Length: 424
Image 1 (cartoon, rainbow, N blue to C red):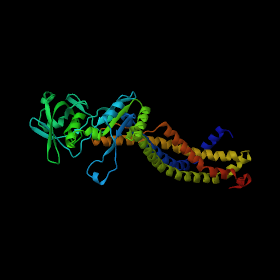
Image 2: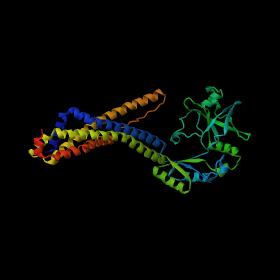
Image 3: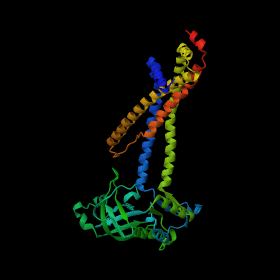
């Protein structure tokens, strides 16, 4: 029996019992719909997250100092730092050919109350170190209305429009404010206060949704002066160092080498690639769990296919006897039933893949519509059906049908021709 004859005969046999064939393939269809929809969701979410991480730059490193173990004396303060992030380290890294940028950072204490005084009026503000571009994905995009973005190395300040609104300054007066002197006012729990005159370099606009707030952008010299007063320390940077460094290298390979170098010096280093690897591992677990739901449905479907093929063997016993009488070998009989069961799985896989793809498209539109209704501006594709997923789904469905047909096929191949011909 040639392969062409085998396929033609198998389709003919399945076509004789269309309803039973369709019902047998429904279980496969449901399982494949579940697998395609769930796995495509995992692929889509992974693609979106990968795009976000790539936008940040996989060659980005964040370096933190290492502190000593916290003791009972450090319950209300920070423990001493064993390894400092110093200016010497910053200069060393900036001198490397494989480093594009080194940005130090100084964090202000959350308990520090900061006020901005202009024209005799004061408003409480939130200090913010502006990091434009891909370095800081969680900072809202900013647009400078007038003036310019202050350099991190300069002792100037920038304020957002909400701050000036709180100070009752009309927008028409914004250009005249650039270059004027404003005052940073600090208050400490110990009761004293500190006033720091500083020039206004720019006015920007940023939105936090319904929770707008007054924020100011401060360069490192300003932050250092504020921290020196707060901690009553004239050598704060020499004693504490920077709180973190952001490093951008020329390539991912260079980032890996610098990461190893800094870890050898006992610094604590985090990289975007490390976070991406963790996300990928989590997504693999999630996709496996989602696919297992469809796998359970396919297992149930395989039992249905096996039952269908066992009934087919019983109903076609006399036919099997005739085939053996005219020269069909047990292998031909076995292959005929295996191909029929595999075709049931393939048909269910094709239908399930198409329906799963359409379901993903529909859910994509529904999710985006709900987000738009909630005023959440997101352009993303959450369900992504790849060629590999289609091939895997069809192959898996066919394999399930094939395996389900092995026992009925073996039973058919073992039938005695004479006994089969006598069967009524």
